[in-house]
Length: 389
Image 1 (cartoon, rainbow, N blue to C red):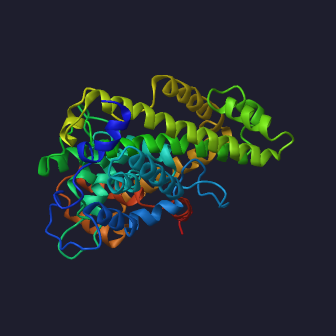
Image 2: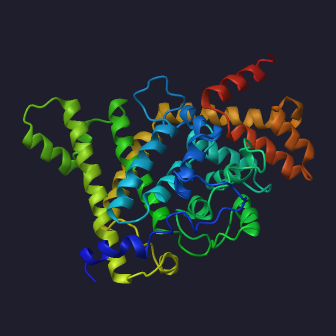
Image 3: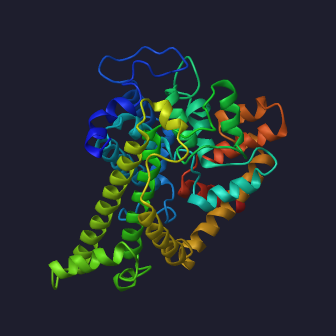
C-alpha cells in the first residue's frame, strides 16, 4: 500500500471512534454539538489545573515578560501542532488535542527541577512523576462536578495521558498503577496513534520555541546556531534569500522553517510506517513493536544534537539554574512546613490529609497541594513562612 492509498483509509484504520463508542466511566449526559473527545478538550480547558499552567515554568521561572513561554503557552502550541499532524495523517484531531492539552497538567512549579525535588521528597512514599500526577488530577483532584471526582474523561484520553511517551513495563508510577487497577489502561502496549502524535508535537514545540526564547533572552546568538544541524541550514537559506534582512525577522523565519521541516518529516515517516504495517484498527497500532508516529532516524539524531545544545546553553545556564534552585528550595521548605503544620493546608487538601490512612497518603496530599501552586505564589508563600509572617 502506498502513502496515497494509506491516507485514503487512515481515518478508518487508525483513528479511534468518532466519540459514540468511546468509554467514559461515569454516566454523563452527552451533547449533540460535541464529540466525546471535544468534550474532553472542553473539560480540560475549563479546569483549575489548566489555568494554573499560565503561572508555571516552561524554562524561565515566573517570567514577568510576556515574551517568554509559560507552561500554558507551551501546551497551547503543542495542541495546535498535534491537531495539524493528526489531520495530515487522517487521524482524530480532537483526541490528539485532548491528550496534548492534558499532557503537562501534572507539572509542579519550577518545571523539571520542581518535579525532581518533589520526587526526592516523596521517595519511598509513592514518588512523584508529572504524567502520573496528571492522571491523579483528571481522575481525582479536580472536584467541580457533583457526582464524581475528576473530569470524567474518556478512556482513550486517559490512556494517552498515561503513556503518550510509550508503553510502561516497570517502575510504574503509583498514581498510574492505582488508577490502572480500577480501569485497565493497557500499560504494556503502545497508545493510540493520536497519543503518539501528542508526544511528537511536544518535541517539535519545545525544541523550536526554546530556541526562540533562548535567542530572545540572549543566552546564545545566531552565529552559534549556524553550527547546529537542522537549524544552521535554515538560517543559511533565509539569509541567502533575504540579504541584509533584519536579524530578528531572520531568526523568526528560520525557526519557522525548522518547524516546517520537523512536521513534514514526521508526516512522511509516519505514513511510511503506517503503510508498512497496514493497520486495520486502533488495536493494531497498539500491538506494533515500535511507534507508528515518529521522526525519521536522521531527523531524530539531528534533534538530539539540538537538544544537547539547549541543555548546555539554556537549561543549565547559570541564571536559569539559580532561579530553579531557588524554586527547589521553596518546594523543600513548603513541604517540611506543611507536613509539620497540616492545619495550614487549604481546606480541600487539609481534608485529604485528615482522611489519609497512612503517613504516605498524608504526604501525598501535601505534594498534591505544592504541585498545584504557581511559581510566584510558591516563592511568596515560602518567603512568608521562612520569615515567620
